[in-house]
Length: 263
Image 1 (cartoon, helix red, strand yellow):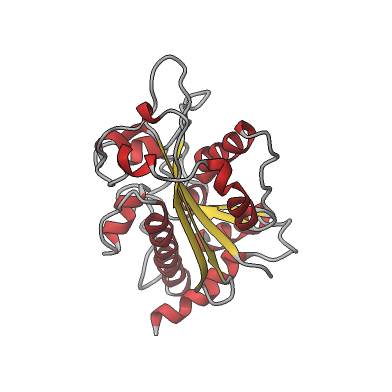
Image 2 (image 1 turned 120 degrees about the horizontal axis):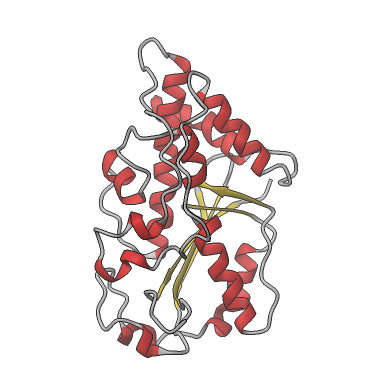
């Protein structure tokens, strides 16, 4: 089975007048699904068509001056296409945000976008399988809960943090599944979908609302349908989402290999 590509994009903040979000950074990491190790990584700043849309200073360190010297998306499109196309895509809230930004960027230069073999959105999976035990499903909160440090809001750093968060969540679910009498389920139900705009809202100023387009309809919060068989349901959802990936399930492999974290 080919590598899973975890990726993340950083963009300009939303602006009035119908101005589109523009890519400022792309970062990706190829991960071996059997060993959960990094195989290769790539990250680049991207110069947007309109530099005035970039804040002079952002807490992440992506400045107008820095992106002014960066390549345009067209100049790095071949590399990004080669990394993404035909692989299983993974990331936090990529289904609602990052995937759309990639498609828009390729459309802007008149090229067809890369296509995934399968999709693993950790936000969607953990919404139904991990719940409120860490407080919420923001990447920064999950990282803090597991002692992984502060989210940097830089593409490659966030991608690597995403993988570590998934490993830790998988370990907790494995413990609860294996020894429910010792480690009871503390998910406290389903959070509903947490968008990146809300996730970053109180921690990073300009980044507060750049990560997610407004949903077409209000998000419905439902009680979690998963209780004692939490881990089995998570694995089943991952298998369904990745049924096109040669009939295998990378998340299932992740859960199996997470046993090594307990040694």
